[in-house]
Length: 114
Length: 109
Image 1 (cartoon, rainbow over the protein chains, first blue to last red):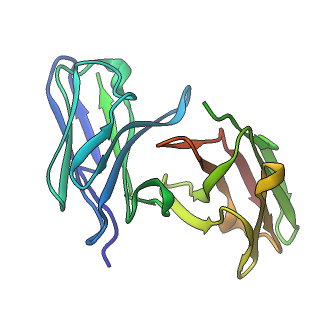
Image 2: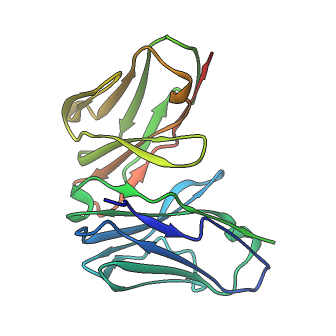
C-alpha cells in the first residue's frame, strides 16, 4: 500500500497565480479530506468527500478555493487567484467509511505565495 | 462545536524518561485518533482509540469516553519521539474530525 500520495511536495508561486494541489487516496478508501495547517489556526478541515461527492465544504475559506474529486482515485484543490495568506501546508487524508474510521494522511504540500 | 484541549502544550524530556500527554474533549465522541507530526511535517497515525486501551511498543493510549478524555503514554522516550502530538476527535453529531492544538515534545539526548 503506497499510502496517500500528494503532489507537489513544495509549491512556490506569485500572488495572483492559480495553484493546483493533487491527491491520490489509498486504494479502496471512499472518503477524502483536505486539511490546511498554519501556525495561527492549526489543522483545519477545508472539505470532505464521501464516494466522490462533497459532503461538507464549510471550511473552504472563500470562493477562491475549489475542490473536485472526479473519480475515486484522484482529487484536486485549486486556489485561484492565490494570495500570500494562503501560504500553509495542505494535507490530504483518506479513510474507509467516512469519519467513523481512521484517517490516513499524505505527506502534505507546502505552499508559499509571494 | 466540540472543543478539544491538549496538555501540556510543551514538554521537554531527557532521553529514557516517561511521559503522559492528555486530550480533553467537550462532548461525546465516536472516533478519536492520536497522531505524531515528526520534524519533517509528516502526520503519522499512532492510535485509533475511541474507547479502551491499546499498546504499540513503547507507546500506549487509553480513552475514557464517558469522562471525555484520552491519555497517550510514552515510555523510555527516544530522540525520534520528538515532534508534535495531536489528538483528533469526531463528535457523535458531527461530520468532521476536530484537532486539538497539539503537545510539542522535545526529547534531548
